[in-house]
Amino acid sequence: MEPKPGRTTETEVAIVGAGFGGLCMAIKLIEAGRKDFVILEKGADVGGTWRDNSYPGAACDVQSHLYSYSFAPKADWTQRYAGWREIQDYILDVTERYRLRPYIRFGQEVSGAHFLQDEGRWRIETRGGDVILARHWVLASGPLHVPAIPDLPGLSSFKGKLFHSAQWDHGYDLSGKAVASIGTGGSAIQYVPEIAPKVKQLHVFQRTPAWVIPRDTRRYSDFRKKLFAAVPLLRKLHRARLYWSNESRVWPIFNPALARTLQKLAEMFIRSQVKDPALQRKLTPDYTIGCKRVLISNAYYPTFNRANVELVTDGIREIREHSIVTRDGVERPVDCIILGTGFVVDPRVYMRGFALSGRDGHEIARDWARAPEAFLGTTVTGYPNMFQLVGPGTALGHNSIIFMIEAQVHYILDCLKQLDAQRALYVDVKPEVQRRFNDEVQGALKHSVWSTGCKSWYQTAEGINFTMWPWSTWRFWLRTRKVRLADYEWVPAPAGPGAARPRAKAAARTS
Image 1 (spheres, rainbow, N blue to C red):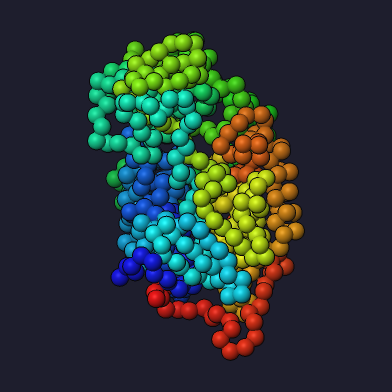
Image 2: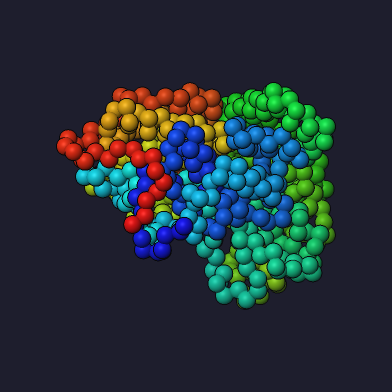
């Protein structure tokens, strides 16, 4: 039974977000016998990114058998790279399989979290007025949930249809319309080929071209799906092969010279797909492949061979009520503008309205003033018993983020286990440990392809790469197998009857 707004709930663990990360955390808590938790989800259903991004052509760029939980396999993936609908159906299925819905509160957007140092627990506040008192909390909202709206002169005055790709209006018929697509990132390269045959005219506004490589579009046969279901070992071997083949892609990341050699193949791909030499040049990036996110598509480049598709590389000067004017003075009438401009990834930006305070006067806005930092992307000094999934320094350019999430969840559970063993009230990563770790990360990034000169969403506005894990993923797995007690300060519970807050096993309590 849902508590009424304005109520206070006490729970052992609060999880923010019901996407891949939050659901994984919940499942592993249940398996560990820790059922006193609640999931706070701002949306109306589970899924996170895959619930929201339903634009035409939306699909994953990691292979299906790898972009799923290792402990919750799906033998009947239909194709190598699944579309959004199949991924969202998988998430819904996992939610039902593990009976997670009773733990989830939908429509609960968290507005702030404050550490109550004397009590050793967190006060978490929602925009609806609820308060959750939790000994631990896990921030699992992920970095891709706040659409980036570009600051373009006149955008608010546009009288036609306007929407972001993550807020696709499926009720709006694009047939016969003059459409402008702004942005050429991961979303745009998927929906542009899908809508081009339907529209009257499509103007694709490109600020910076992306490297796009071929996509494996093969489907799994019915025989293969039945075989994976009947012989789980074969499916596991297939998943392992995908993992290690992806892991081999890390070598160009750490060897820019090798990346530039492989780049020749990507250039050949452009020339083989686009007929016009002038368009070939406009679509060819001037930075080393891998510096920005590498995209996969067989359909994007050929779209520019269509007579009704125009690639616009002149910057936008202004947007008028029914048109877009570029810096060269050309005015293009449009009925609809689609913003394929990605997401706000820097938490210092999307958490501006989120008050987060830790122990001894720590404020996240001040602590992250230079750049977001964490230890193993999971714990942040000054914020005891707070954990992150897909935190700073855990994003990947070559493999599945689900692998990283599972490793982090294992690490968090070990933290909780050690807290019980130490009979500690709370645990806080030592500042020198976090500082040393982040110096190590930044040192490794200096020699990677991500530091060859391009500007990407991996970086802060000041140019600091705060998002990427700069090594092989198996190294992250090794470092998160077990908590090093010396890395943390274990603050003991105060003496006296009732002073400590023992771990409860009951369901979340509401007052």
